[in-house]
Structure formats: structure tokens, C-alpha cells
Image (cartoon, rainbow, N blue to C red; front, side):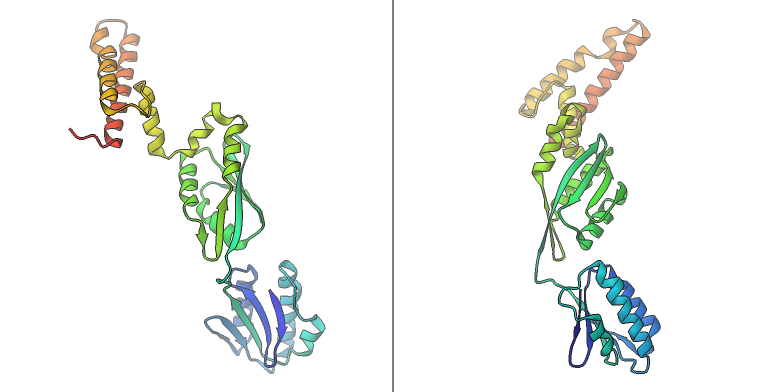
Length: 270
């Protein structure tokens, strides 16, 4: 953001994604009787309201600019000396430049992670907040602290990775930090499984139930299902202790469910 003294205006250049822009527009439209909203600018033409214009420029300079940047701005004394001129708030799109934001993942503790931006960016932060609003614990200008206990969280994260360009901001995910999380002692806690989608987790669990692996063909899976179904069929323990019957019944149901899941996911036709 910067303030310029032009021949016909005092011009305030503000990025469309600046936190200051909505406040500046609201102030201009509410307090000046001759303010006009155009597609990419706001014009304040009140020649007879210089005190209000002085106040607005003072507010813009000392509150708005100190939060962002005063680079290339005119001095405050020069600005006030020319406050008789119309004020133009110019909204800058900055779509010609793609800003690169690197996002890394850090495990705070089991079930809680932080997404860390390598530098503050309002648009990137707003976008991430909207995506992870259901998992948000807290945030600051560069970090989002998130509840990662739910499988849904990792579904959302995986979906986000495929959407890298948001307006003029490129979100680059630091995959090395994701790998480091898995190497940091979380393998045994099931943390790595969070990188899988729900269907992938179901597939792996179903194969595990049938004592199969990802490389087995359908015929092998089917034969293994038949073997286990015979072995754990409740009829084999009919009349025995109720606990044994219930154990076989539960195991048999798990085997059947795993087989049906695999048929569905592997799109087997009969």
C-alpha cells in the first residue's frame, strides 16, 4: 500500500486483498456525501469537507499504512498540504504477478498439527481458514493450528493439495515436511494412514482382514475369502460356549464385510 500525490488526486493504492480495504471503503461511503464507488476505485470529491479528508488521510496513513508498508509513500506533511484535492482509493488487483507461498506441516502432538506459511499472506490465510474452519484450533499471521484426529481432516488436506493456484497466489506444499512427520515416530501410531483417503484405508483394512496384500490378484483374494469363511463359519462351533460362538460370528461378519468391500472397490463383476 502507498499514498501518491498526483496532479489531480491524492491517491491511495490498496491491494484488493488488503485487510485495510474494507475499512477504507466503509469510511469513505459513510462519511463523505460525494463519494463514488467505481469498479476499481473510490472517488471522494468533497471539496468543502477538508477536515474530514484530513482525518481520513491521517487515519489511513497512521493506522492502515503502519500495518502494511509505507514504501514510496509521500510524507504525511505533503499529504495534508494537498488534502484539498480529491482522494482516489485505487484498488490494485496485482494479478500479473504470482506470489509463491510455501506451506509446511508440523506435528504439535498426536492429533494436532500446524500448517505454516513461509511468510504472511492475507489471501492464502483466508483461503486456508475457510477450508479448515471445522478443524481450526487457533491461528496467527503465519500458522494455522488444526485438529487432525478426524480422518475427514486428511481428506480435506489431500483435496487442497491438488488446488495450488488461488487467484494470484501459488500454494506450494512442502512434501519433505510431510514425510518428516511420518519419520518422527508416528508410524506405529497409525499417523501415516492419515495420508490415505477413506477408500484407501478401507481397501487396506479389508485386505488385512483377509490376510492378503495389494499385489494379490482377485482369484487369490477370492480363494482366501472362501478359506476363512469356512474356518470361521458359526456352524462350526454350534452348541459350544456362547462366547466362542459370538467370537466366530463376529469374525465371520468381518470377513464377509471385507470381501464385499473389495468386490465393490475392485469393481469385480459376477
